[in-house]
Picture: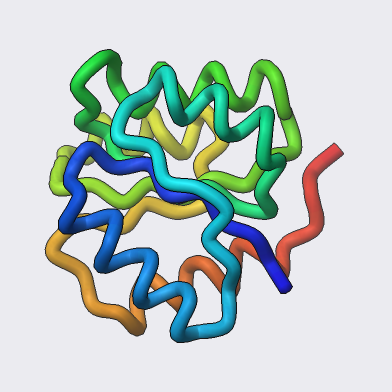
Length: 124
């Protein structure tokens, strides 16, 4: 069973993603409301995939993404955010995010991106 860490400052959004992912057969190994917790949980739980919001109370999702990639270069990360500016999307993809989903999103879109990301072989 693939293990996923959810990072979003919104409890509602974390709950929605968690329900969506567990219903689809994934195991949610942790939920982080901010960047610091995200970095700690990424190390502790070593998930197969992280869903990451761009707007976090303590730092940006892009900084968190850079931090995760520095510690765990093969970690698979999908950005799920209300921020949809092209420059941010491109930056996230440049930093190693596999996919960028703009809120509001459909369940199909999230599950498709997660499934696709988990099928990809890590780039070495």
